[in-house]
Image 1 (cartoon, rainbow, N blue to C red):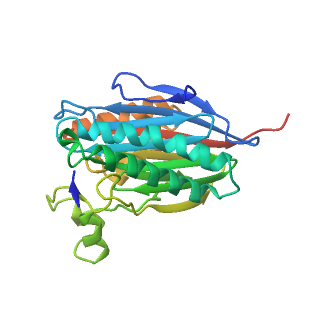
Image 2: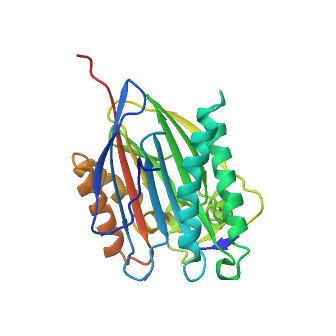
Length: 273
C-alpha cells in the first residue's frame, strides 16, 4: 500500500483550459475540456492528463512518491497507456477492455522498472483510461482517481476507489458521509508501479444523449463533496471549460491541499443531415 503521439493533448497548466472535439466512431461526438492545477500547498504537480484523438482515449494519472518521482510515474503512465492500447486494439480482435487492461499492465511494468533507480524509489501512480466508441464507454482503472457519470441531473460514481478508507467503508466501519470526517490520510491499496504485477479493474457503460463524464484525481473528490460537484455540473454544464475551472476553484477554496485535475466530456449522438 502507498500513501499518497502528435495527436494527443496533455494538459498540466493551471491557467490553460482548452475545448477539444473528438469523433469517437462515425455516429457520436464528444466535447472535452481539461485542466490541472498544483493546488495551494504543493510545489510540484504530479498529476498528468492525456486526450488521444486517434484512439479516442482519455487517460488521467495521479503520481505519488518523493521529490519528482510521482511526476515521473504519472508521465510514464500517460505515455505508455495510449501507445500500448493502440498497438493491441489496432492489431487484434480483442475487446477494448482487454486492450485497456493490457495497456495498464505494460505501464505498470515500465514504472516498476524505473522505480528501481534510487531517485525513483517508491514511486507509483493511479490511472484511469477510458475508450470511447460510438455510444460505448470502456474503462480500466487502478487507485483512487475517479470517473463520475452525470446523467439527467443525477451524479453516479462509476469507479470504485482502491484505498484503505474505501475498504473500511465497504466493511461497514464508516458511511460515505462519515468517512469525510475521519481525518484518515489517503492510503491507496492498488497503483501502477508499486508491485511487479498490477490488479486492474474494468467496466463498461452505454452512453446516452447529453451524458457528462467527469474524470478527476483525489485532489477534487477529497475536498469537494458529491452534492457540490453535482450542483456545479447542473448549473454550469453549458460551458465545459468554465466548469473545469469552477470545480478546481472549489477544491482550492476548500484547502487545496493536493494537486487537482479534471477532465469533462459531453457525449452527443451525431445528427443526420
